Length: 312
Image (spheres, helix red, strand yellow):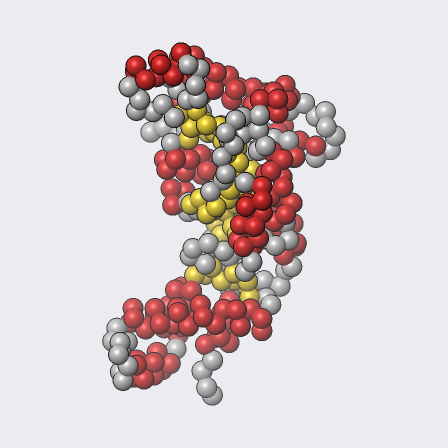
């Protein structure tokens, strides 16, 4: 029987339902499980310009073939899903997009290889990325510490999950700092983040506009997720971002410092202090954040203990 790479990939993913694999991980399994197929590829390549002389080269060739066959495979097997971002991961599920979101949101769990994550687990990971890679000081905003004056789920569209401060004066000469202070010029940029475990075509518009609503006051607003699934999800995010200015961060839960700003946010030149005042009037965490910003402007110093930064 002729070896069909696409069928073998689908069968492997189905046998390992819900687990996610990179194309290289699948190709490595092919290499280990079907030696006759691998040997045949090596032999047939010897007449080409670049023969597959070693195992790594043939695995990389299988990776390329899996990637090129992906659109056709997903059309043939709708249960074969992929994540966005790099590296792209493949997995099998018979759940609909909306069912996957419900599982992630209602149960607050998502399988990421062998690990299970809750949304609250992502906050310190995001803080680590922001501080180590962007030098942004962050603080968690707990909506439970808010007045419940907007009815059920009202706070969902009001408060971001995490806020941040970027110190523009880092490394400035003291005379420059004092000069800027006298001019009452800007020494910070304020950031806002809406965090989700999973974003796919089912919930993309809801979570994006939640980020728009919750981040309208800040210089920079971002939607953050540890999983981005669906072939056109990133494309849709880019369209929405171009219209509304919200950026997107793909959070690497295994190595937060390797997270990436997939879509940069558009900067708002001025903070909307009226909206910030509304948040401060109703949430204790947010008023503490504003106090931290004020303290920095008054003293020029940032107290690490006031921010969500892991210290060694």
